[in-house]
Structure formats: structure tokens, C-alpha cells
Image 1 (cartoon, one colour):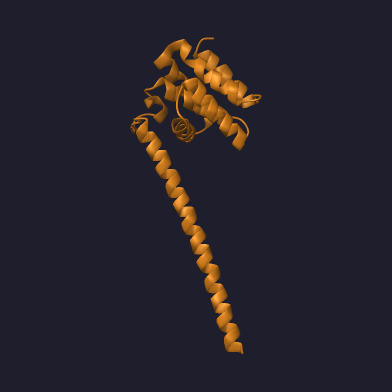
Image 2: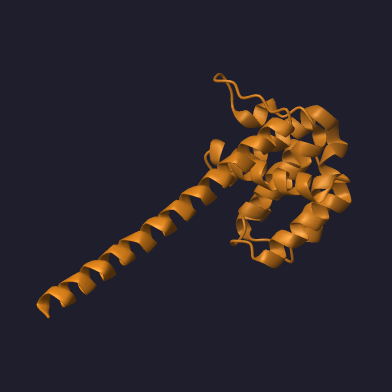
Length: 171
């Protein structure tokens, strides 16, 4: 009898560890897929990373700068809900005239720039300066339209970022 109980306990322990290992494998696959998405987005937007500068300084397209500026601006607020993310995606599509996969990639790249700059607070002025170099004063308008459509109200951190953008764009 003790032998049967021992075998049942051993089988239960083995099945417990088997399920834990499957969950770990699923998590590893999800992380791998997220990394592939990020790397693919960066490659599709022809982003080249150098060791001598910040990645945000390498932006060479105005629509990418406008979209990532809006995405980073949203990171300054409270954590976005699914509805907030969907509103941002539709605003990016509408104002930048891009498709859904490109809008999703812009969100990934915006998050990447926020991490590479150290924080969203540091990324907003850096991307804003790059956008000003690419488009001049009119470059901020599409980004502000996206921000206006995607947010209900702004936080103090977002208000400070808007003041910094106004200073950069001389408004």
C-alpha cells in the first residue's frame, strides 16, 4: 500500500513539474515572439543603430518621429488600458495615414526609444528635436492631433512634456 501511495506521489510531482516546464516554455516563446516583433519593426522602418549616438537621433522619417513622439507621450501618463491603446492605434492610422501593422510597430519603436533614452521624459524632447530638424514647425501638428485624439486628459508629466515641445517648436 505504501508503495502505491509513493508511486502516486511521484506521478503527481512529475506531472506538476511537467506543467511548470510547459508554462516556462510558453513564456519563453512569447518573449521570443515579442523580441522578433521589435527587431522586425526596427528593420522595416530602416532604423540603423550606432554606438556613438542615441537611437532617437537616427530617425530619418517624419511619420516615424511623429508616431513615436505620440507613443512616448502616452507613456508619460497612467498605464494605458486596452481602450487607450486602441484609441492611439486608430489615431495613428488616421492622422499619419498608415495601416494597423505600421501603427503597432510605431508603438513598439516608441517604447524602445523611451527605454533607450532612459525614460519617457528624456525621450520626448529628443524625439521632438529630431522631428523639428526633419519637418520644421509644422511637424508637430500631426503628433498633437494623435495625442489629442488618444487622450482624455493630461497628467502633470504630460503637461511638462507639452511645454518642452512648445519650447522646441517655438510656439
